[in-house]
Length: 331
Image 1 (cartoon, rainbow, N blue to C red):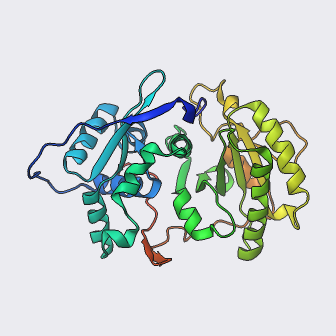
Image 2 (image 1 turned 90 degrees about the horizontal axis):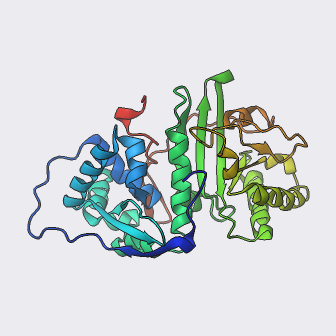
Image 3 (image 1 turned 90 degrees about the vertical axis):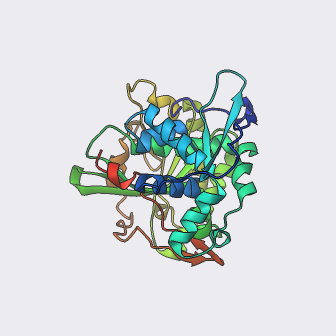
């Protein structure tokens, strides 16, 4: 999926989940991994069985069995979109009992988390479902990259980014990627493009990032991920025209990559040598971690990235979950 993302046009109305058994449900204590799953689906809105299996379980079979149990516990809900061809795995969202668990841990009520059951299920009918799944697949693939020394230290959702910086810029996600070479750590904003947005509108996003850099004093790279090499070429032309007109272009580092470039790799990942900085005439592409050395004005990573639970706009924003459950963080 990372090299051939689904299209929204291929999605149809979701297949309803089988009815749950009536009556009381016997619930055993939730494990640490279970609670991590609840936090992840709350943070990222929807995750598939495949994604959760990659992130948190040793096998797909074990993941499917445990997620079914969490559905029986009524802490997760699920749906399955119908495709014009083929089938999809179950898609998981937070259920009311799951929101109650998270709220109790934070010492608040579910409404204080901004949770609404109907809104949680509405993602099944959203016109942005494939985009949301694409962003989550991008980070899942990066997080589960089989390079043992590489690590995704942070993965923040679009919702969190919007609540923190939405008055200036609206990235699709924020991430931190670490690599042992030269102690390199790269903080970045992700712009995930499915070629459904006009190029002038894509390029116009740089103005918001420019204002964000000016306001915060932090220089954070923006990574544009597009589906095809042709789209990347056209995107780079549009971005460069806007980037050169910014008040301080060097405060807005940009790199692009296309999913199509992953085709030659046996185990494709966004960490591969597919990235091309915007401010270069070189055709040599870089690994993701190599971007950390490209821009000298890049703000050093904040060591205190794991923010605690805070209240913003009258709602409680839970601390971002780690990209892997604690028990598997070293896998």
